[in-house]
Length: 512
Ligand SMILES: Nc1ncnc2c1ncn2[C@@H]1O[C@H](COP(=O)(O)OP(=O)(O)OP(=O)(O)O)[C@@H](O)[C@H]1O
Ligand SMILES: [Mg+2]
Image (tube, rainbow, N blue to C red; front, side):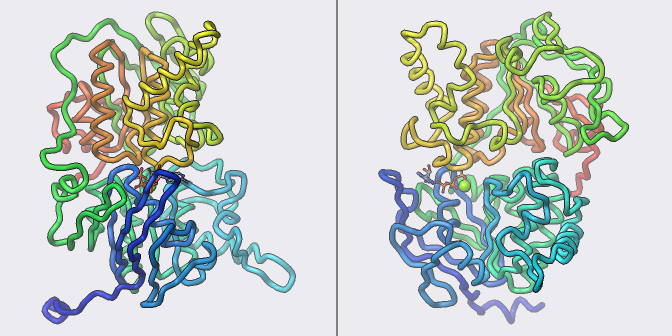
């Protein structure tokens, strides 16, 4: 229809990076990158963990300055003095790591630093009204006065998105905006993105959910080791194109470890009930029973709200059950503290790495050895050596990309921080490991590495319970897939099941 008319029209570049380099000491995060953002379309940036995606976006939004190179806005070179200057010029960013103040309300987080003023002070009621509007647009039932710390991770991410939208930017950068969102929340976000681009807003989109990103992409670029290595238009790319340019030909996520027998039952959960955490009168996990054996990898699949996270947190000792028992190698651990359960050999890689997984003021190495500390304190003399060798081994095992083990954890890319959380828990030599959405933010190559590592440990007897909202991951790693819905087991499958059958059991629509 109209395509014939548009076909020769060059898309308009609104913001461009020219020959941008950024170094941190000997780490060359960006090595002379050219990048264009087009008016009214979505440019997706793909790349492995540590490729330099977030660094480039922080430079384009004035959060950090480049070591060299130029930024060109509307054809004019520009130097941002601060993020607020770039915001005034219409550039807004959703950060990969949430940057909200937990004890402030949703409203105050959204308007922090740019309050709506009247002659007599802050116009709180107008701020509240606008927050309500934003939440309506995002189809999220969140009261503007709720403290952010009371929200689940996905809702916090929604607030982060709302804050970026509230600026009415003409260039909106989204760095992993959906890592903690449910499928329906992602759908709403994509509707909003389409609405924005039709009004001329330019979007940069970064995600390790490759299939999801593919749905929204107009132009795709791939960054590899600080260098731009591929560019293509929507009609020329598919999943295979992305994977090939990110990690190379013939890539495969693998399949569940095979060729051995499972051992004894390691974890046995009997009739477990967990009450709703907001005080409503129902159970988020309802009389659930589950046995896992040594060497077995079990995937917990279910939609947001199915009770996955609560079940894992309860097994790890973070939530109290209202009935039922948790037995680890024939010992009832229901009454033990989190630390006692870790000592007994049961660990959790939590969903929220910023809050629960890492100590931000510590180095990469100290974070890795933190949970195993009791193993070193008994033999004081040899402790530092043993600790160092553990740290070295874990950095290698989980392939953490870091300048050194003494680097601050905050200097690592998002995905590499996630790998540290996984490494930290594996370092304790657990008998049972629970992983709640562990692949959040890690690239497809790293995911395969983590799967390989878990498979090796499973072969040696480790029981793995893996929770995810990506069916493909379940099929690549798990011997058994348990589908949760409304706190109960709604289906049980093996790894030869179809994606559709698993999704259908969870109550998910399989239309797309
Ligand atoms: N403040 C910092 N100090 C030192 N090194 C840093 C700092 N910020 C980033 N880096 C390094 O720059 C490189 C690029 O990191 P960046 O966060 O841009 O990666 P990314 O592509 O966003 O990765 P991910 O997919 O994991 O989010 C990494 O090697 C990282 O360790
Ligand atoms: Mg990043």
